[in-house]
Image (cartoon, rainbow, N blue to C red; front, top):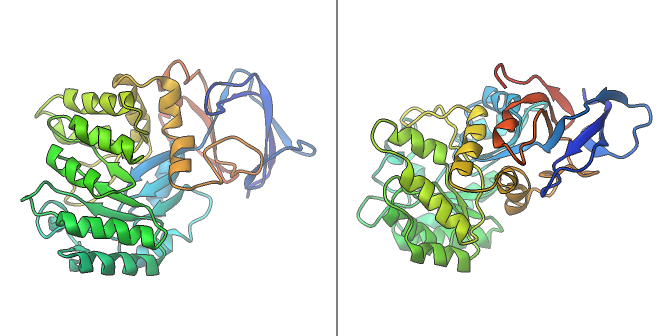
Length: 356
């Protein structure tokens, strides 16, 4: 059960820099202010981060949440989880990582998603009316946002008209829309759909300058999932284009969120380990030329703000006590996020993974 704890002499990442040493109080499930009666944990020299957020995962059961938590990933943003009964069972889990989900994705009749074992025919949208029905059904299930899959014209994805309708219907239901794109042509379709988030980056080639300009004008957010794309390309091609696309997005002022596409899904083009992979994603973002402070923001305050998670993403009184205590200074060396001393999910102490 959560207890009252005072972490003393810790430097805190405040979203921009490390603060001077201070005391942070964990008061049950939230961050408190009064250390009276708290059990004291002295941590001179340690750094306290907000719990990390992976902005693209796939959940397969409670063990997925436990694995995320053990690597300091206290929130996972799931981008396809079905059946609905699985989602409902996961919402009952306590004392582990928290999550949000898109539920069943909207896909086209051809492509990798349509071939995944167990993918229901209900996921396929062919017309704008199909898209509106899909969104209405997901909204009735209580999803947190809508996920669609874009393909380049002729590659078997939903038509541009269907994707436009999907995004418009999501917004009409008060939900944000995420659209998947893994080719240059699909990226154009995804951007044109008006989606709030474009997830992945093209496997080959780089994002077109005009698409980046349109994203900037439309305040669209990128979730490149370099880790997944690197895995798909392993042994086939270098990741130079991926890193260039991410660098181009960052240079243009596009908001970028750290996401991995962590999954153990049969039929997936690459299995990405939950939890540990987010630390690798942060390192890949740094390789793309993003500074360590901005990389940290991409896995804390930025996804919390972009997905409307107002109760997390920062170390502030009243917010969830989702916290990661580490050694080293991640504002100068991003690999320090791996040096985990302690983790709390809503005040519950979590045992770090072996190797963390």
